[in-house]
Length: 314
Image: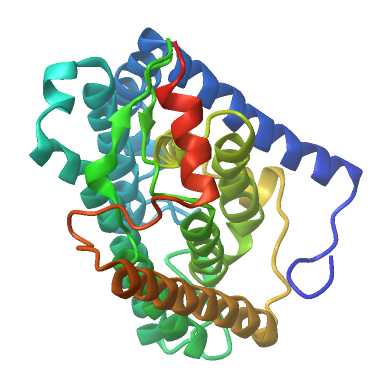
């Protein structure tokens, strides 16, 4: 598979596509039915927390699922899903402006967690690559580059005061200002993070997982990227915590462990996020906007498409 991954065959790609479409299918189930969301993001995690994860995600286990990062990421993703459900299904909550700080807050927290992890991997000093906490990592300048890219991505989070609930039956949490430019910058940053810090798992938790929320955003339900992302991330990490051997033994697709690949992926992430912040700053200056209150992309084609699909729906 060239610079990024070792080659995989028909079966490997078949498993990858199964993961992708399974995540999208369960996301649709949880998105379009209230009881589906409650089952997947409240009932199932409680059962797994009590009966399964203490064993499969025990500290120091051979698959690396017992690290602080995995546990924090699991519950922060679930908190996002449940918090968004409160906004979606209880109008009195959604009408409170201060509640709209929760979506950008939980998003920024998730990005910051990953930035800290990138910086942590750099501090390991594993310049030639090493297994640390049973995960293969290679320290290098790419960790710093991508950590900075993630911080820029946080700075570029905008327009949260425009969040609302769609008028159709699915009652999705819509964020019109989160247009394709921010989403692509996030995807590149997050893929670089998975490549840097969960390297040999990134074929799934990078490529498949990111596409599982990006495809629905562009082709199924526009404007609901954060909701798609929270659902698919929670689903994936619950699966990994439950079946930790999946990416290492059941269907492994390791990276090439090539320093050039790490550098190129993180450089692209950094450059795109620098460009995103610069473009947002340009729009803020040009239209005299307040980035803490105003929506940055009002008037753009992408913004209008989201509004037309969700505000006019009945």
